[in-house]
Each structure stands twice: as structure tokens, then as C-alpha cells.
Image (cartoon, rainbow, N blue to C red; front, side):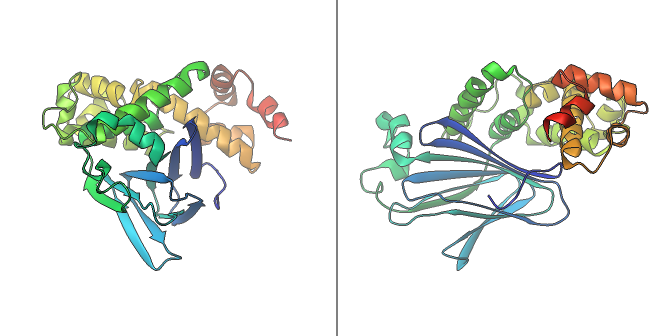
Length: 294
């Protein structure tokens, strides 16, 4: 990859199983960032834009396809390699699922007629599709990005969510959206919950109280709590704490800030409180963590 991870931009690749990957691209900087990865013609690609915009270029930049917030891009070409060449706009995030066509076909063997491009006539042709994704897909994508689980079950959790994501992508039933939390089927409510997340992250040093946050986004306190837990898999402040600690860890890794500076940046007025929170999260102090990087 062209871009190294830091507190503002990151690339993460998760191997689900042989020939099946999840790629997570995140850019919180004020400038565009480029990513590249080899992907050959044996693979099908699904790209989901959670925030902002990304531009995928092909054939050495001779043509490109955009994917914007809450939209998806599906593509494959059995005759031509489609290496990933992504320009991610400032403050944008994309989740991509890449799997071999062999693996993909094995998921839908009995439903080939239901998925148009799986038919015998189309299976050797190129295929491109751009379309908005549903609120239920938005929920699953958020759960893939944000989860607070024991490391021993993370791989199983992500694998299950990716299968759920693919199933929802091809589910064309109008009644298939989010049964366990009905009001999240309303796209406006999903947007409000996502706004709540953006607010607490933007103001992580001095976040609003839950009642203040609920008022600001226009939801009841109960719906804020339930909806946030449903989408992000954690409480509002649990999610914020995890973000603070991850942000702090990445700041420490840059070597440009001392422990006091990092603590202040993420909202701790005293170093002792920051050290205590960091140790609870990572089972080591910030100072000891720094020694492992040398």
C-alpha cells in the first residue's frame, strides 16, 4: 500500500478465508489520500462508501468510477485484471469486500437465476453496478468498522458480518430491513445516529452529555442509546472511550508527543487519569507501550 497508518489515515486488510478479504480505508485528513493494491481478474469487488467520496481509477487512469457516501460499487471483469487504485477524498471512509469468483459462486449455487450476473450467459462477462445501499447495510458496515470484542472472537464476528453484508446486498425484498430495531429502518434516524457519532468524535476532549447529544440530533434519549448500541455495538461513551484510546495509541506511535500532551488531546486534564484509562484498555502504561516500539 502507498499509505502508512497514522492517527488520521489508515488501511486495514482482514483475511476472512482463502481468497476472501475485507479492506478498510479511512482518511480523516484534510487532503486526498491514495491507496493501491493488486487485484487480478479472478476476483469480484464490492466497495461501500460510509462517508465522503472515493474515486477508483482503471487502465492507468484512462477511466474512473466514483463512489459517494451511502453508495456502493460492484465490479468484476473475467477478461481483465482490475487492480485497486483508489483516491480517497478528505474525511472519507470505504469498506471493500474482495473475493474470488469461485468463492462467490459457491455462495449462490442454487440461486444463480436470482442474481442476474451469475447466469450461465453472463458469468464470463464484465459487470459493473453502482447503487445506494440500504439502512440495514449501513448498520452492518458500521458494526464491521466499530466493534468492542475479545480478540479471540473478532475473526469469527467479522466473518459473520461479511456474510450478512453480502446477503443483504443481494436481498431485494422491500420488507427485509432491520427487524430488531425497527426505527433504524428509517434512513433519517440512521443519519441522526451517525451524526451523534461524528459529534462525539469531533468533540472527544469535551463531549456533550447524553441528554445534550440527544437534543442536538433530534432523537429521544432512549432511541439514541438503543440506536447507537445497535449500529456501533457499544454504548455512546464506551465507543468514545475506545476511540480515545486508539487515537492516543496512534499519537504515541508517531513519537511526536509526550504522555501529557496525548492525554490532554483526548480529554484528560491529568496524566494519571489518562494513564489509568490506557492501562485498563491495553494492559500496559503509555510509557511501557512506547518502549515496545523501539
